[in-house]
Image 1 (cartoon, rainbow, N blue to C red):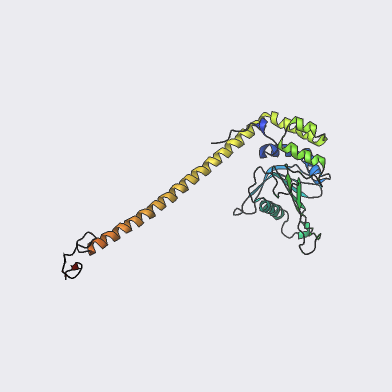
Image 2 (cartoon, one colour):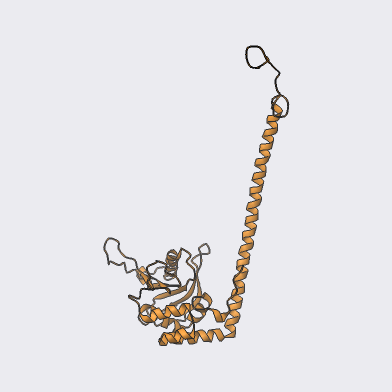
Length: 289
């Protein structure tokens, strides 16, 4: 049974549609990045929601939930992820690679690669260590503490964290607010940035054009799902027909073999006839020759 459709009013910031609409505002994205990273992140261009990157028509395309670059040319991709699909570390690796592939023009030096952050916000603990924030860089196994400094950083944020060591109270409140996006939680955070975020959320939810976009996006998603189901049904039918054909051929072959064997038996039935027997005085009955 299909789940009931959430209304725009019921969405929280872990829902991709609302997240992308809200974070496309530069001031809001700057505030959220500052809370996460612990330093100001002044963006140079307008943030892009649902930004598509594809290297060639044959490659798998990537849609970044929200993408922006700051005045130092550092790139930021922020994602929300509701379910643990068991591939998130490799997905973030692919996202990082796609950012890199679109940075350099022919003839440019590798030193011109921008630093890049891929940040994923999730309502579950991907690593099971209770942290609110997991930050990964390339480092050396043989020499603890030796980092590669290649400019690639991946951050996984867990709204269900329990260990507050190393993170700010404002980040904890932000993650709590992402999962339960209400005015009450915003006010209880005692954070000017989160309260400003709540105002932006309220503006988005009251906007009729956004409401229409949301319904159109939902209908498109449902149509894509239905198309996928139809393709699956056709493939299933084809596989079933092929299996049925093979089983029919196998059964026909068995029947043919039985008929051949039957014709090779003396009585034509597949059974040898009973031979006449006699009994003598010295033992059991013997087949007569």
